[in-house]
Image 1 (cartoon, rainbow, N blue to C red):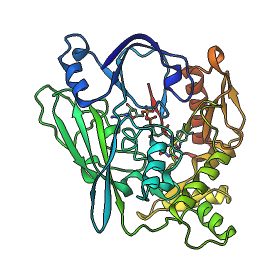
Image 2 (image 1 turned 60 degrees about the horizontal axis):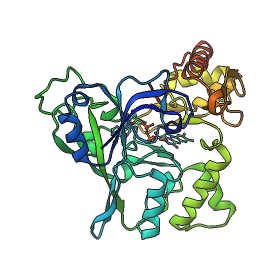
Image 3 (image 1 turned 30 degrees about the vertical axis):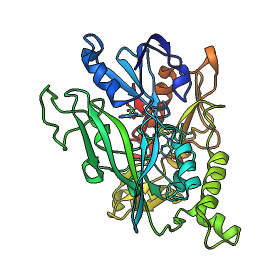
Amino acid sequence: MLVEKNVSLQPYNTFGIMARADTLVRVYSSADLAALRADAKLGAAPVFILGGGSNVVLTSDVAPVVLKIEIKGRRLVQETERAWIVQVGAGEPWHDTVAWTLAQGWPGLENLALIPGTVGAAPVQNIGAYGVELQDRFDSLDAVDLLTGQSFSLDAAQCAFGYRDSIFKHAPSNPRAGDVLPRSMGLAGRAVITQVRFRLPKPWRPELAYVELARRAADEGITQPSAQQIFDWVCAIRRAKLPDPAVIGNAGSFFKNPTVTPEQCADIIARDPKIVHYPLDDGRIKLAAGWLIDACGWKGKTVGQAAVYDKQALVLVNRGRGQNSVTGGEVMTLARAIQTSVYERFGIRLEPEPVIL
Ligand SMILES: Cc1cc2nc3c(=O)[nH]c(=O)nc-3n(C[C@H](O)[C@H](O)[C@H](O)COP(=O)(O)OP(=O)(O)OC[C@H]3O[C@@H](n4cnc5c(N)ncnc54)[C@H](O)[C@@H]3O)c2cc1C
């Protein structure tokens, strides 16, 4: 492990917020986590686990020790008649991993192309896009419990995946040294994911249920696209819709899409017939948070250097750069104002998607 002091976190969060870490530890292996625990000072300190910083809002300097996960490595661990099982280190970049699996001839992750961040963070919020969620391609993961030092593996059921949710997003309940790790307990901040195994099903089938992909396939007159074609389409659609964090700082979708009962939805439709909504398998209705925000007139509005992206109201962006960058306070002031106005108009409480630190 490599320990650094007084480190700028601006290069390590895609919003480009200026904040500093008192201590940043680069973690290259599980053994580094054992060394961290053994260290008299670092082992006792509170920590924050950081991947690529694409799903965090830093509202101040970070006092906990920042564990920057840089565990590398990718390999095929098993091939059966029904799947390729691929294991990837938590610190590998997500998009590069998707491209690498395709290049190896192991398709299945193409709908999730171009999502920023690391492989280790992907299970944390069960990343999803264009009709596929991580849980659809997940086999299992390895993690280290920072409290006990114990290494353990979890399968999909044990990760308790939900919509942008998993056991890794929930705070531990009364953790104590010596706890045997109960699977029902929240693991946020307590467990470092070190390896993720993907189950890429055979035979591969294109996933084109998402309307923009289906339209693209129809426009090009292609009924059986290759995985590479879907990868290219997803990249093109995303580049047209979302700001590139390397150019305009942002953390992707700032709010989760809320779900409501059919009665609540009918009530809103009576007032706003154009509301964008999708029925879910469990009978509830998913509303497009971006539509709700847009309907309240937020597109292009600003607070200091924080702005609602003018092409997609669900994305909050950094209008500044370098020393003139947005602050976490500006982002959160804008976010709260949006939440209030959506609640006043629709009676719906929007929940932020990124981790607010
Ligand atoms: C332009 C843009 C587009 C995006 N599009 C999508 C999208 O389509 N779908 C989607 O789901 N998300 C999307 N996101 C959000 C983000 O990319 C994902 O949530 C991504 O998985 C975060 O990865 P990260 O490594 O940057 O995590 P970070 O932001 O560093 O961390 C996020 C959380 O995971 C925890 N964490 C990170 N690594 C580990 C680990 N190894 N072990 C345990 N906990 C860990 C952190 O403590 C934190 O709580 C987008 C973001 C941006 C900026």
